[in-house]
Structure formats: structure tokens, C-alpha cells
Image (cartoon, rainbow, N blue to C red; front, side, top):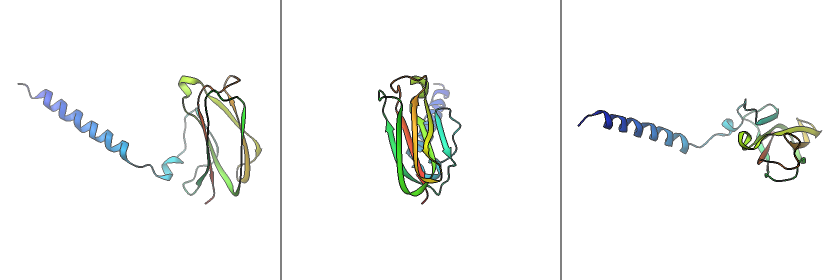
Length: 132
């Protein structure tokens, strides 16, 4: 019998354990706010680990486009993240601040399906982070 197959199996097992360990770790608040260079993500403001999530909404696929999301709070909204959840498969989304402003206690974000379609082809998640 040749020892190579058992060595390859041991190596595969070690890689699988390493990957599984990475999947079971809990992400920290700072990892959620790291800058993202993904074109499916639109960001307004500056991400900071000291901010807290104060708004989380998903606009589901087949919802009418455009849609405006309004958030009013007693704290300033310093960072907004708009993420297309399946961009390569179902297209993208355009997002813009149409009311209020970053670093103010109120904001209006308008989402439009890329290509000016009448419905969203993918789920879109909008998260807003406020001062602590």
C-alpha cells in the first residue's frame, strides 16, 4: 500500500477542520463595519466600530421599484450601507440620499432597480448605523 493517499486524506481533513473553525467564529461589530470595495454595495458616510445598528430593512425581490425608505431617530445617522444580496445573478440596485442627510437624525434613501426596471430582481438590504 502506498502512503500518499492517507497523507492526502489527512491534509484534506486538516483543511476541512480549518474551514469549519472559521465558519463557527462569531463576527464582531467591527467586522460588520469594515469598508467594502464590492460594487454591489453602496455606502454613505464613514464606517466606524463605535456606531450601532439602528435600522435594518430588506426590500424583497419582485417589490415595486423605486422605493423610498425613511428613518427618523433621536441620534445622528452616520453611516448607511445598501447591499444587493444577489448582484451577479439578478442585477444591481441604485441608491441615493433624497432627503435628510448623513450625520443628521433623519434620512430618506431611494432605491431603484438597475436598468430602471419596474420591480427589484434581487433582495436589497439597507442598514443604518447611528451614534451610540
